[in-house]
Image (cartoon, rainbow, N blue to C red; front, side, top):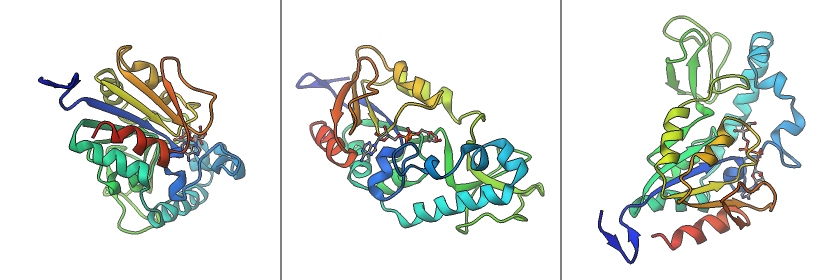
Length: 233
Ligand code: APR
């Protein structure tokens, strides 16, 4: 690849985003002061046992999150990440189940915790359907006649596309981790798959929790991500 001013053309830039990327679009984080898990217990709404015990309660929890996603708009961080595709080879690995990266224009997004705007069969996890309505009801069935559930990874379940995400991280020239507390595995372990010679950045308003080898860009995603990426346009 030819280089221009010491920079490879079409650098591979990999993002790992978390709830902090969407919080300025009005979607709550999980562990902040007004976080989603403050009001709920994970066991009651986002676990296989919750689904077995009270599917209607789980459906209602995700219906509410889906309505919030549908009412939200991408923010400047989503927009800057999408615009970077004009000059770089971008892969977005996201823990978020919203579609704000896609709505901003990102075309290569790996949802390792699923997508709240899709439904999944409960007998065949490969049967995934885009939702034509904002809710999933008891009695909404897949083509094999089983109850549909949100296409979201519950706690204790396998994450999605982890091999692909690891491969993407290993191929990165630059890694930007945005808006995640890195408290959930295996997603959090992805930060250490980045090559040691990659430029690595961690965007967060907090100064703690910065992974080794990452440069902290302290601030909100909508301020720090556009600022960082404008140099790469
Ligand atoms: N800009 C950037 N980061 C922010 C902002 C902001 N405006 N506001 C908050 N943050 C940071 C917080 O400091 C915190 O580190 O975003 C992070 C959000 O952390 P969590 O709420 O733990 O969300 P996340 O890391 O995405 O959670 C991972 O946990 O519950 C599961 O499946 C769920 O995907 C989720 C996973």
